[in-house]
Image (tube, rainbow, N blue to C red; front, top):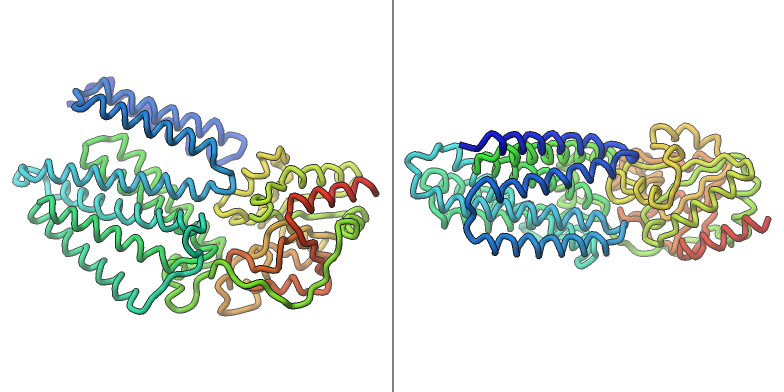
Length: 460
C-alpha cells in the first residue's frame, strides 16, 4: 500500500506537469513552465528514496550523478540550432530506459505468471517493443540531423518486406511473451524493436525528419505510461500520457504545416514522395547584388517583411538582424517577422531563436496572420529560408513539398534572398522564386553579410 503522503506528493507533481505544459504554450511563460516541470520531476524522484527500501542505493546515486553531469554539460554546450538533435537524444534515452525497465519487470514477473493479470504482461511487452523502436528511431534521427549519416532517404530493395517481416515477427513474439512469459522472448522482442525503429526512420529524408522526432516522442510517452501501469506508479502513467498526447498533437500539427499525411512522411520515399535532404547547387543565372544595393532597397521601402529560416540560426545572425530591424523602425519603416510553423526544424524553434536575440514577441507574426500582408509589402527579406517560401508547394504536383502551406513571399513588390549558395533547402528541391525577375540574391555567410548590410543601411 502506497503511503498517503507519497500519493499526495505524486498528485502535486502530476498537477505541476500539467501546469508546466500550459506554461510551455507561450514564449512569455515557457521558462517558468520548464522550471516548474523540472522541479516536479526532481521532487518526485526524491520521494522514491523515502518511499521504499532501495537495493544498490549507491549505484543508483552514482547513476543519477553521472546522468546529471552529462545533462548539465550537454544542455550548456548545445547550440540552439542543435536543439532538435538534443530532443532526439533525450527522447531515445527515455524510450530505451523504459524498454530496459520492462525487461527487468518481465523477468521478475515470470515466476508469478499464474497470478499476474494478463494485461500486465501485455503492457510489459508493449513497453519493451515500442521503447526499443523509439530508441533506435531516435538515434537515427539524431544522426541524420547531425549529418553523421546522409539526410537523404535511405532505401534498398526489399525494405518494405524487411520492415513488414520484422513487424509481423514482433507481433508473434509479443504473443508468445504474453502467453508464456519468459525473458528470452522479451529480449528478442527488443531486438526486433530496434530493427523496426531503424527501418522506420531510414527512409525518411530532409525536412520530414523533425516530424518523425515528434512521433517518436509520442511513442516514448506511451511506453512510459505503460511502464507506469506495470510498476503501479500513477505518476509515471500521468506523465507518460501527457508526453504521448503532446507528441501526437505536435506530430499532427507539423504534418498539417507540411501539407502531408503521416503515412506519406514515413513511407513516401518508397514511391519517391519524401523530401530529399541535401541536393546539388543550381547553376542557373540569377540576379544578385551587394549590401549597398540591398540597403537602398530597404531604406526606400514603406513596409518590409522578414522571413527568417534555419540558415539564419546556423550563422548566428539573429542579433544583427534585430539591430537592422531597429534601424528601419527608427526611420518609420514598418517591419514584421513572418514565422512559418516549421521555420526552424520544429514548431516554435524560430520563435525561441529570435527571442534569444531580444526580438519583441509582438513582431513575430504567424503564417496565417501575415500571408495576406505580403501583397502590400515593398520588400521581403528572406534570411536563410527556402522551402517555406518555395512556390513548388502550390504549383508543382508531385514535388515532395506539394500541398505544404507556404509564406506568400512572391506576392511582394521585391524579394531579397540572403543565401550562402545556390544549394536547395532542406527538402532538397529547387526554388523557382530565386529566378523570378523581382528577386535579388545577396550571397554570403548570413552573419557577415547581415553586418555589412546593417552598416550600409546606417550609412544612408
